Image (cartoon, rainbow, N blue to C red; front, side, top):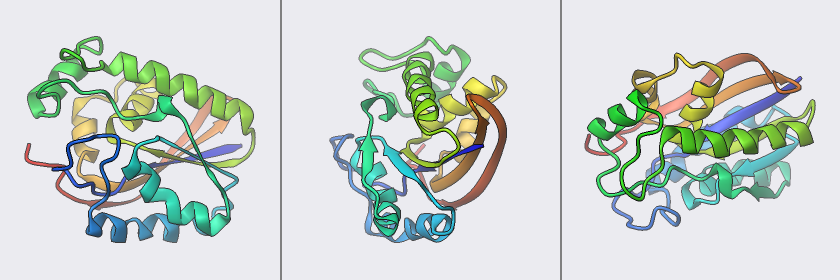
Length: 192
């Protein structure tokens, strides 16, 4: 069996303009310790991560604990958002129509396609290993929706304030066997 521990990043500096380089808050760095506390006895073989700073920073201590380098994959990045792309109205539109996206933004289907392609490769290359993937809320939600099409906007909104958040997906080859939520810290995503 292959175990994939998806780790949604801890609380970022929301006022930081550049999405790619947005760091964690001091509190987010502190909160990331629950990731190491949870994963330190899980015998992790490999770490993959979004190239975005907040995701890298959230799993960095855990990767260092295991003496592993993080493999970044551009396909694991957060959804590209256009103007006013992160508000409840836009969340609802995107989840109601998975092809909908604001100008210069990505749809749920676009994000899901690139993330499932990355996950499929990761699973093929790491059979029967324990894997950590540093990720984002929308990215993780599109993966969960792929395996359970009933996962929708309300499920996304349920986890939007969970930073960090660790969830385990167990696979045999590329077949999902189980999903287990493990730990999270509730933070305010931003003014909704």
